[in-house]
Image (cartoon, rainbow, N blue to C red; front, top):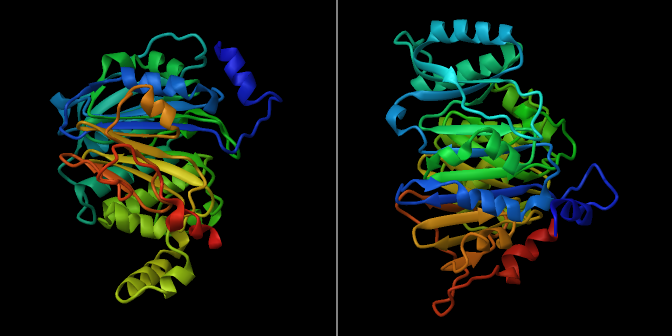
Length: 395
């Protein structure tokens, strides 16, 4: 079946909103061994019908080992004036080790390309005493994105990069020459925008410092989440609800050092009747989190894959309204919107399971996640719907 037929079968009436769409895929080699992108491209091709060509992207960790002590800034300019102003700002705040065009190639289906540049920088020695190094970088990137017209920073972490734009995943991969890169964590996203503007900066992944996130779903609490974050100095200007998830990750897991499990208790917490039924000290902990971080509860259906240099996290909303499947094989962790995408690149996984709603599945360097659903006699696991998934829907 050709590509045109697949797109027609998925959306025969040409609807501009398919709320269940968007494709997510990620893989992590927990030994740190570098992986080529072939499997990622194959898995995304398997989920072609989940996107409509209005956004796709990839995040790769481990691709700049020779400059791993520098922040790698991938920057998009839509106007030459933005580049001049950005470089003036960078020279005032950073030492620039290397400045060069981000490698790209002409690709059919990609048009109106912005100017793309990469800078490898370290903060200047005169960081204000109110900042540590990482907070200084985050502050600088937020200023670039909000104060300098025609400039957008795609990513700013160490030994990682974000490559995204408007197009299908295969087009974005070819445009950025991603077959030339290797990484031990690779994530990908294919977008089907529903309630937000389709533009290059609004494509996924969303990256801030060393963290990145890809998202399928709709965060209906965006207004409350945005207000909470902007009271803390963040600026939500990217025309998509996923932005609040990226900033919540920065606030909680970067600045406040929350574990993935504690982060999940904030954005996808148990319901109040479940909290009331908990024994101490769990009841006190969950109540405190709901009271303190109530503005970061993410309502609506969502599935996200979050990555950092040391880990990859899969998480869905608390009643699991968006699909997400995880698997392990050898030293590799896989996560995808569909099991078929995983099996297209890993035909015989050791374990496959569906995460419970609101419960993160975490792979770390040196450590694969274990499914609580696994039987000692089964290598393939399935979701346990007996309580955790069915009863969560009670409201």
